[in-house]
Amino acid sequence: MTEVIVLNGGSSSGKSGIVRCLQAVLPDPWLALGTDTLVDAMPASMQASDAGIEFAPDGQVIVGPEFRTLEAAWIEGVAAMARAGARVIVDEVFLGGADSQKRWQKALGELRVLWVGVRCDSAVAAGREVARGDRVIGMAASQAEVVHRGMVYDLEVDTTHAESMECARTIAAHVS
Image 1 (spheres, rainbow, N blue to C red):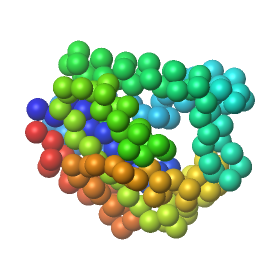
Image 2: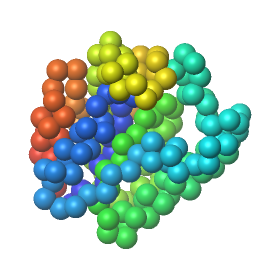
Image 3: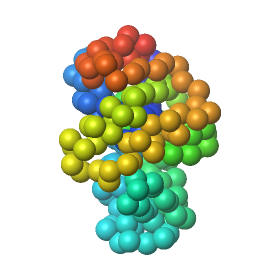
Image 4: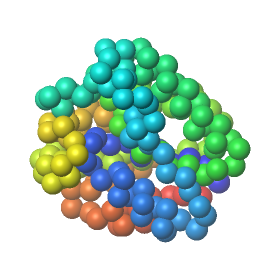
């Protein structure tokens, strides 16, 4: 039985919408956690420090050692929740591509994980980014491809033309 679903895609690719739809279509309750959850939980000072996380004016995201330490603890905590019986959907942005996936794979260990790539044309994601108004302009374009480098997925969906619910149903069909 699938215990964790990891969605990886760039900013404004549609991951959060898919997560909400997955929670609606999957028969059991699933917790939704993601990189935004982690960043929101950190003190504001982490966004003003080279050791934390920086959102550059061009959309680049730079992370420092204090961020990595907290991120590692958070990943282990998410894995512990899944081991304790919570089914978890992770909404992630693997800026390090395959290296990011390896960190999660190590923490998730023996858990049954469905790895899902969420793709979206960079121009479409950039348009969503502008419409949202809560992201640094350029983030979507800079992340659209880099987050998928070296990744190994069980399944990929593309939100360029597909709605969140359609993608969620495709993913749900692969959850055992």
